[in-house]
Each structure stands twice: as C-alpha cells, then as structure tokens.
Length: 322
Image 1 (spheres, rainbow, N blue to C red):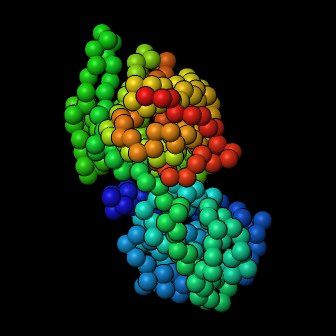
Image 2: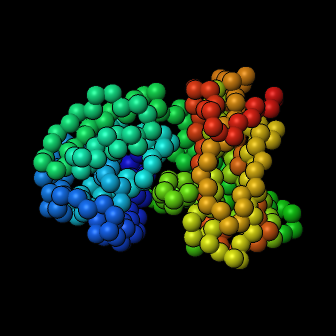
Image 3: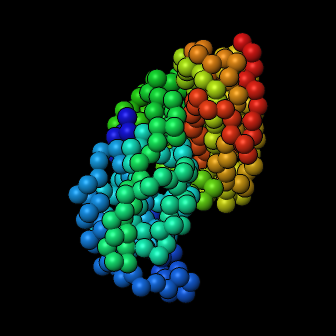
C-alpha cells in the first residue's frame, strides 16, 4: 500500500515544492542563512542515498527550505518529504529516513524527527552529512484510514433527503466518485499543505446546501486510541467565499467527536479518542462532513488506530460505550 501513496507524492512534490522551495531557498541563502555549502556539494551525498535507498525509505533535506539538493534527487523525487516538522503519522509504513543535512546543522535535522533518534548511521561528505535513521516499530500505527479507503462506503445525502452511495472506485488515483470523475466533489488521496506542511490525507470536499458527505470505514479493529486529524488546506483558508466546516465522527452508532473548523483557518491538530475500553472490538467508523456553502472548501482528513494511550497536548475524549 505504501507504493500507492508514494506514486501520488511523485506527481506532486517535484512540481509544487521545487518552485516554492526554490524561492524560499534563494531568500534564505542570500539574506538569512549564509553557508559554505555550494549547490554541487549535494551531488555526492545524493548519489550515495540513491544507491542505498530501499522501497520503504524516504528522504529529507536540511535545512528544510533549501532546494539545492532536489535536482540531484530527481530519481527518487517521489520519496522526498519536504515537511519542516514531520509527524509520526507522516512516517506510516516508512522503514528508514535518509537525511541530507548541512554538516553544521545536523543536530537540528535530527531534532525534527518526531521520535527519539538513537545512534543514527552517519556518512560525511565535507560540508554535507548523510544520516540514516531507522523508524522504530513503536512509532507505527495499527491502522490508517487512507490506506483502507478502498474498503470504505462513500455516501451523499441528496436535496430530496435520499442517500446516494458512490460506486465509482478508481484504484489508480485511489478515489471515489459518484458517477463520472469530478474536479472537486470526490473522496480520494491527496497531498495538501495543512498548517504550513504537506500531509497525505483524504480529500473530502463538502457538498452544497449543507448536505452531509459520509465516509464509513468498516470493521475497524480498535485499540487504545483513535486519532483524527482534519482541516482546510492553506488555499481554502484564504478564501472569503467559504464557510465553516462541521466534522463529526461516529464509532458504531454513537457520536465520538464533533468539531467545527473555522472558514479562515488551516489546521492539522490531533483529536485523540480514548478507545481503551473498547479495545479489540471491530466497529464501523463514520466520518461526516458538512458546510453551508460549497465554494473553496478544500477539506482533508485522516485517521489512525494506535495501541498507545492518547497523547498529552491533544484534544482527547473518551469513546462512547456501545
């Protein structure tokens, strides 16, 4: 399943992030962070990474704003993760991380990894160092909604109150459509900038006139925590035409989470639902999305099951009893 995700990253990262990253890199290198590293200094370390990278590996560059290494990584562009601050969820199904860092900034590069890094393997190339970091099993999640989207049931409530089930599944694009492919009103895999960083997520644009869009994931095996993240992307948060988005999550037939995302905000913070008392149960989990207006509501979400208790600093609540 990780190959499905990386194929989409390959289409988006080289185009979007090269442009944005290049502008940011130029400004930073000239006025903010002058360094001894020349663009060609990244060639040899990039070749080393390309020689050793595995199918489930990803690449990070540091400083995260620099675009100089990217031309040398074009052959593995779909595996380059350009987040400033990656989350554990961003590393689902990843075996190891290859970090190409300015040598003087290596400690900062390792500090941005969302778990404790113990004895990374280092290979120095002058002003650039390559660090190989193994992703521990303890940071992985038992289940991810995005990877199980093909098993989900997608429903739209029509203006007459009838419920329509979307039956057009496109495995290549990993998306559901109701009938023909739609430019916006589909449910499928995307890579969007949410809260200043790109994240893999499930695009779920609300319908018009406040009609509910429902996505049901069947037989989810619960453990200690069900984590949800959702939000409008950066472009949507700039629109003056949009309205708030209501996000509701049901576990079985009981509501476990209700949250309103402001029309002018782009967020990706976690909601942790404590499912300890229901650990081991297999239940349907339904996500419902609504908005009063349909304009510019580029909304995305994802969810994960974990055998760890809810994390501190998250918006946590207890799952309802069956």
